[in-house]
Image 1 (cartoon, rainbow, N blue to C red):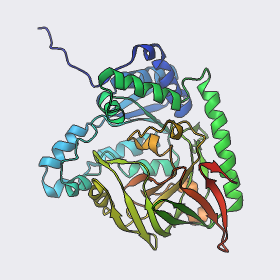
Image 2 (image 1 turned 45 degrees about the vertical axis):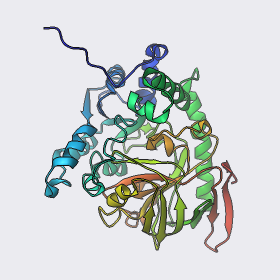
Image 3 (image 1 turned 90 degrees about the vertical axis):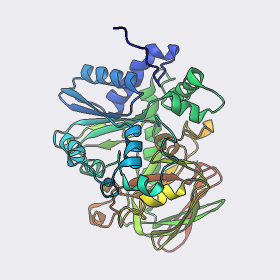
Length: 412
């Protein structure tokens, strides 16, 4: 019997088809740095099949023992939020988190494909019920990062619905062509040697991180339109950039693209207000016009133009959800911010602007003496507060301030 044609939400532009292996090679060979004999876990959503297949092929060429693909379908999340019993909404089957822990025990590699495949899918649903369902995030993902047992990366993958969200004046293949073109640029794949360009950028960011660590600021002060926020730091808060290393000595680039330096703040010493400069996509909803206020380290108020109640529900999940686990600085020399494109994808938007994150901290960004002081939570949600209009100063222990970022340029 002849099968009916099924229209995919994914287009691979003609001019990109011969180069899809370059994207896969960047993710596998440089981002995750897959080693011979490793199990490779790939996480993705429907609509990204062509890129998944290219990554799997490249991983096997790199010597992978097995490539394991897990799919998260946002339409199934919608069905759950709509119809599941109230008592079961926060239930996560134990094997989902155990799967990630097992990859860590096997010293495997992980590759995630970002970019919404169904933007706005949950926007019409009850935010309380959306906030009860934590998936696809599980806290075990933070544990393997803190244990440094996997070499991993995340990389964007276009879909038609995502492209039409980013470029509302375009549709179908034209929108996806445009998204591919901009992603090719921000991933530096438009360069003859993208890995060399990434290493140059990582060297720049590492140098800034080292200078920040040498000064050892007590806090950071963000100032800009609607923003007057002080984020306290721990005595051993350590600025990190671009690359990490596993316990077995495998270097990897956790995010591609990556234009940030980041550290763990003191979860008890954030105060003031901040206006977010980019939308946040969370739980299938797009949150716009977000403003927050902190008192004594804890979130005291959330307001927004649209869907801020979704974030509010996520931040009720546990004791640490309303405190900060990360603060990151992004200058204007990267490739994302100058485009002026809002991508509605945290991986990209957080690398266009300085940001803070609610929830879990990364233990690798503090010294051993402060490991028990960092924030812990079942969530990790990045929100962007940076722009060329938002200046950042470092605050010394005596209260004096030193300019760090002014109009998007490093001052230190």
